Length: 380
Image (cartoon, rainbow, N blue to C red; front, top):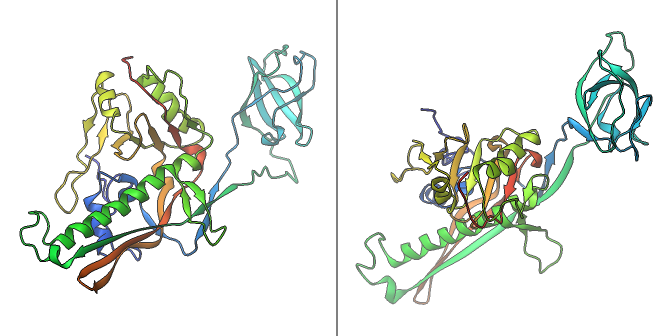
């Protein structure tokens, strides 16, 4: 059985790693390890400013559409691509059954100069809009002054969000005995509810935040959630939404991640997916991922048709939603770890605040996928 210690699949156990004090946040990420899995389980790294950049590296696409405006004839020695900047001199490409050698590239006009019928294939006419498939780059070994093929990374600004919930108990209530068997005092209960509210609000923003910066004196920073960060593989009106099948799930999540160059390893699902797995005849099987410090088993599942993908139910995801992550490219950035700031006693009341500040960071957004809007499931 693999170990999940200190991985994105379990709680972050090293509370003191220069980031997490072993106080209320240590309690929170253990107590709510199953309710708020991303906030609780993802690695935590510090950040020192109210906003930071998330960088998305652009890998060379393996397919670009032909964009001639008309069919490519069998005798043509140049062709127009939808984006020629991804190609380089010496590339071998394929259109249908014909291989072509790229001898020159004009990235401004998107024109490729090509040698036809390469590698023993036969030059043929090809309809416009067919894919130009990149096979490989090949050289003679004697080239000089070869230009670099650089794809500029894209960056998106992420905003740190402050979540704050107060707790307050009157003296008369605090003086009660036997208030609740699980809590020492009413104040302890109220403080724990404030911790839950902070964790819930932070986790919900991790999914659904739209991104708001400090643009004015009245603005309240809101992080960009996963739904906003992901653009390449975000599906909100999926095919077969009312009769969703396992193949649909694979298409919209795992396959989309692979197509974008990712290595999907973690599938977060809304809790209605647990019944979906049963409908599909592939009931999710619990994986022994250990337990938190309170002895509660950590929820982690696998399904037979999703080999190697760990499944985590996420109660705060809205129904009909699944998020597939290349988990080693996801983390929580903390500007302020969760802190408990007691105000002390004022009059006959005991007061305090639970505060946390940070944001989710998802590198290389094309490596991840989001699907929502699923209304019903059907067997394959």
